[in-house]
Image (cartoon, rainbow over all chains, first blue to last red; front, side):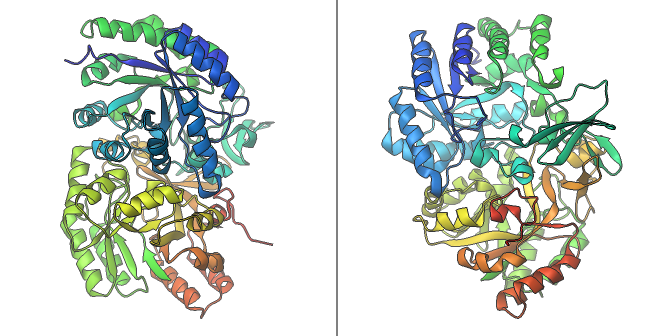
Length: 337
Length: 298
């Protein structure tokens, strides 16, 4: 029984108000990114400049919480110095760890800042203990975030075979594809999560009321069409309705959020060290609601995993901020696959 | 410049697969990547069968390479990987860091760093070369200009391979989208992808072919075709990869042979290839644009 190992609650912050909200509502760690393509939520109006990050780090550290900086896109030869400068800046600000996907950048960080803690980003696509141990042996990573593709027993198996701390996604937008290996957005728009830190970016989105209904397009490609009574969702590429063999449906995934509250005792027993909440692009109100619920749930599991029960009020609260107002266990639950 | 045939990404019957590789033995391909890289449930050919195919191709003068699975989820996936790494008759293409870890630990110094390793800069490439890679394949989303810049920025002197023909491998998932189409779960999928020789086309609600569902893999609907871009490819790549398709793969390989040899101009090769494509062409990625676009320089 390892449920007395503390599980950290890792919450998203797309802005300074969101960071403060996360800290105030019980996050153990907040993760954030700079205002550029060095992180996987490179959206207009989001993220931190040096001044905001300095204040954010101070706010969190004053309250004994940690700040993790996501530098989890893949630098190229022509922009390499932008990424190494971001590593230096993060280290200078006294943050607690950087979340990295590119091995070249890990090597840089390890050499230049040997004291800096490295977390392997979900964008690193490491789904096995062999892959995770590779990064640990070569670059000394201390934590790995697992892609949202493994079932619960598979997560347990990974944990049993590595010394590296394992962090898993608990709640939020659901990537259906293995993170770090999805070029769907690049194919449609030229902007990819890997290189630009963006998926289905807003500047390529068009909403158009037509006689057939509200149409949503991504770089001209029709992602979905909504009848008058339907709530038109954002055209995330993998969550549109398409036609396969004459049948129109959500061919890849419905607009839905991941929610693993009910698995929390199992994740605790398996030895998961941190739960990540997705959503740096979401509002401080979202951060407040989700952080509050997960804080309470994790505290209960830490006290007594065996008597843990998901409170209906928690689910109601979380569904309010879920994509499509519904949730799924995703790949943790085998039949989803 | 060498021509490689990538791993067969679709699931064909045992006999179709064996017949296909018998043809490939007579084709202009110099290198043939073999094995099931998409889904561990597919089993028309077992590990020993793939070794037999590799031996047959080797006897025909080809370089046969065993490709590892792209998404590794279970201990039995790892077991299959360990078996590929343990044999030393054929080189191995590593499509996941698990494979890199095992190959490096085994002291192999001859492996190929595959397209899903996300090699975007010379630092990462150097690290893999030090770990034993002697050829690498650029991520399909990488442009020719970015590749050229990478190679000019202190990259190790190992062979560079570029995807030059085929539907683009865009994503992998734990979920099987072919099974989902038939309202089945992956664990009880009834192997519905078997015999879909070019996968299952996904169209927009306007009827435009957009993507291809191939089990847990999602591909483009369009055919990435760099025949017309051969002059620029020559400056960066030593190996061009053709991805197998349902029909006419050998004809495609022959077009590449003729275009590389110069007996056919890139424009003519591209023109002739139009009859061999299952969908419209695209080459946007190579030109730093959305992959779906067919870019023709002015």
